[in-house]
Image 1 (spheres, one colour):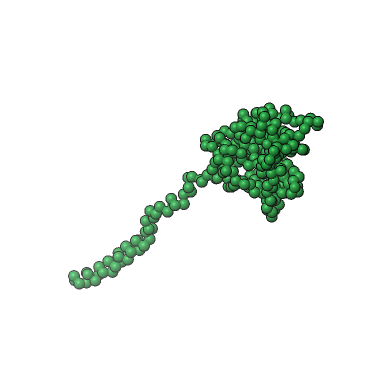
Image 2: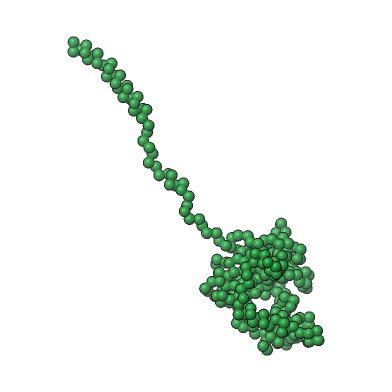
Length: 264
């Protein structure tokens, strides 16, 4: 009897075991505790864009993050030189940092024109007073006027790219002077320094009449005695502390040294 009962209970035990296995197979696996979701979380900080890495309009003022020098193009005008026609680009520099800007840190600008970016030759002419680099170090808050000439026409400047170090301007440079005389054209306001006021006061007082003799001095490196500068008209004198005594700005956009300004 006991043997029969044992065999009778065997199918029931196998059935229960089978049911138990089916239930465990249907049970969903435990939820994953992986933290991979945090890896896809976007960064909370965005790298700051370096102001010198962009491409700017010709009327934009750009501040160098390296030296804190605010640079803007204030004028582009044609000239005739011994090398042929050219253009002169005027830069206004303003030191917005707390440190003195060393003049040798001003990089040589480069210019290219057209869609193909044809390089333009820079004009080095003592007779024309080009280039006019940074003259002396720039203290905090002070300004400088810099001029560079290139062997291109004004027509070429309608589609040009100008680089000063890592700063790049591109567009139509022939409208720079026009925009500064109208509603501003996106240019930053001119910052007037004490030196600028002094130069403004000197304007006009140095312009001789038609019968006045030409100024006496040099347009390039001093060599020999000062000579009459026929065809030159003094616009204003640029004296200390920004320039050496006698430094002269002529009405044709060039600079030099004259006895008239040295005697002021």
